[in-house]
Image 1 (tube, rainbow, N blue to C red):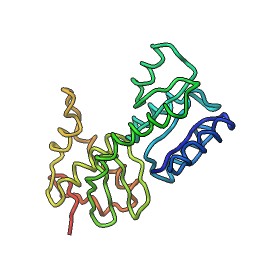
Image 2 (image 1 turned 30 degrees about the vertical axis):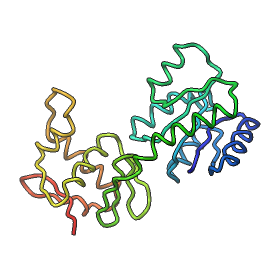
Image 3 (image 1 turned 120 degrees about the vertical axis):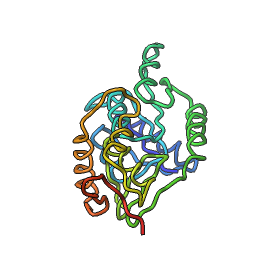
Image 4 (image 1 turned 60 degrees about the horizontal axis):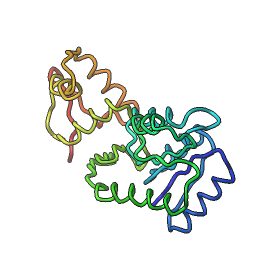
Length: 221
């Protein structure tokens, strides 16, 4: 299990790394949001321990940004804030659990184990099409073993195409899928724009084939 610890207090950071290591986990450390973002782009983690207040911004706002981008790894947020409203805000912004400082090592490890147990049964359901892999549980996309970061809508579109490999999906079907939670009718040009961005990010435009006058398809040999 790989844990990312994000805290700007170097003494606490060292202590957390020691606790995590002695519990049998592998950890990486980040002192800032920028460092944490870089670590997340380089490696897939099973859990993130995230401090609320960081030198270059708010951990809570950073977490909300990650959720908006489609990151689903469990996050244990910790802070010295002890108001109920603060805890509610943290959970509403995407935290899976909240731990108030100071906390005991025993409680920290118990919370970590609970989050990791919750995620463990779901670590499956990976769609593989050539060099493309779509982890439909963690919402992680890789191509040639390199992670590709997509917006939430781009991911939804790619997963839908991958789940229906070899089936030509019309622009209307794709648009309906993207807007399944809304009553608003949006131009099909939105689908074309998302496809264009997807092809650029994947670096292999041929993966998503255009069927002229109909829509798009991902071919699986």
